[in-house]
Structures are given as C-alpha cells and as structure tokens.
Length: 330
Image 1 (tube, rainbow, N blue to C red):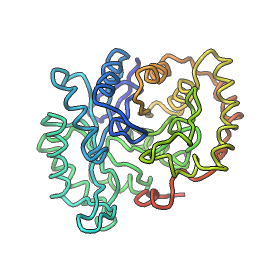
Image 2 (cartoon, helix red, strand yellow; image 1 turned 180 degrees about the vertical axis):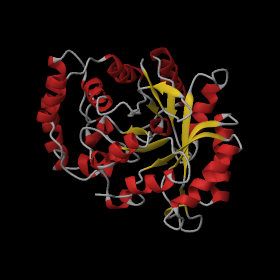
Image 3 (spheres, rainbow, N blue to C red; image 1 turned 90 degrees about the horizontal axis):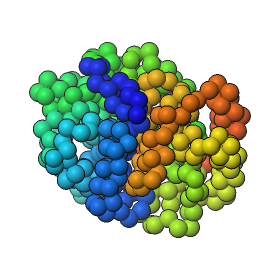
C-alpha cells in the first residue's frame, strides 16, 4: 500500500483510508465483531488511516474503534469530527462550533477512542453564527495543548478554506467526491493542491453504486441513509444503475473490480487525494486496497470519462434536509 501526506508536519498515511460510518449501522445492521474483523483486515492490507465522527451512531463508531485499539493504539492514524448537534429540546439538527462545545465533544471522543490525542480533528459542519477565523483559533488552541495533531474542515467552500488558512495551517478538507459527485473539481481540488492541503474524498465509491453487486433499494433498511436519497429513488436509480453497467463492463475488461477502478480514478485526480471508502466487509475492503496497485494510464482515464462523463448522474446527491450545512460554491 502506497502512502500520501496527510498532515503538514509530514505525517503520511495509506493512500486508501477507511471511513467508519458503517460501523454505526448507517447502511444497515452491523456488529462490533464484524467491525473489528474489518479493522483487522485493514491492518493486513496496509490501510492505516481511519475516519470517524462523534455523531456516527452517537459515539458507537468511535467506541467500536476504541475497543479494537486496546493493544493496537499505535497501528492507526485516526481522524474524528465534531460540529453537528441536535437541540436538546426540539431535536432539530444544527451546528455548533463554539469553543466550549468543541472542547467537550473532543474530550468525549478521546475517551471513547481510548486516546489522549487524535491525529486529525475536523469541523464536521460550519456554524453559521461564527466566523471561520474564530473557529480556527479554537482548533489552534487544541493543537497547542497536544489534543489534536492536525486541523480539518468538512464540506466547506474554497473561499472558506482560504480564510481559515490565513489564520493557521489547515491540514485536510473532506468532501463527497467520486465519479458521480464531482463538484469539488470546480475549485476545491485545485485550492487544496495550491495550499498544500490534503483532500479527503468521502463516499468515493458512490455509496455502493460502483460495487460489483448493484445495490437493491427495495432491500434497504429504514435506517439506511440511501432510503430517501434522490439518486437511489426511482426513476433516478434505474437510470443510474443502467449507466453504471458500462463502467462495470469496462472494469471487467481490464481484469479488475469496479470498486477498484473507481478508487484508482480518484487517486489519479491528484497526489493530494486520500479517499476513504466505507465498508463493513473485509472482502470489499480488499477490492478498495487494490486501487493502490492499479496501473492507471491516460487511455484508461479517457475511457472512464467517456463512459461516465461529468454530470451523468440522475438526482441530487442529498435531499433538501441533508443539504443543510454544506457550503455550496458553484
């Protein structure tokens, strides 16, 4: 497994990471044993970068990682996040980047993970009531205290990144990015490269659409994020599944898996990209890891672009409710 730079202090990680949202049952039921098996497989495959958050299962994902880390604490570079919360009275989803809130959430995350320091700490969503420069000051204080190693932001705009970077070093930006979600190509991928910031694509395999087996929305659990997602709702889903058939056939012609090819495409978009596919399956994780060894060429990239041109996907990537908190910039 090749490595890429994650933090500006020179810290490198496997160029394929592991998103741990699925450990919280976001895409269907799972168990601690299954998640631990996936983490063990990650180590065997050379994947040493984990991404989680305080709200993934309201701490379940972090706690699952923490129970595995006992005796393995030095094996992974871990990123977690905070900033999304719910009003205790109304239950309404909102955002809080205030210093006391972030400090409290960080301490709880560290306790669940069984750590006294986390390598990378993201603001999960920006608080509209606070300027990003003030949020940076809070994060820089955590860094000075040794609580965090690096600073990150999720789903911000290139303009916000520039403002944050004017206060101090931003190590990473995380956004959805894949062959069917390419908004980041309109400024974020380029700005990260210019400012020497790692760009960390989440959902790089299209929430399963690029898997060898096409998802069946009729089988989604009620708790599955995709249940109401516009791209998985008819008639959009049928259009999308039909379009992806050509890509999957091309992967087969190349002697590889569609997951592998989609991640290899992602890696080829820039040396500063570190995709974090999420899975509950050790077999699927092996297909992800294989992207690091895939020999990408200009001809293959051109064929992929021909098969899945920019803007091919039917349906928005989020519902109106899910869009809340994401910074649009184009």
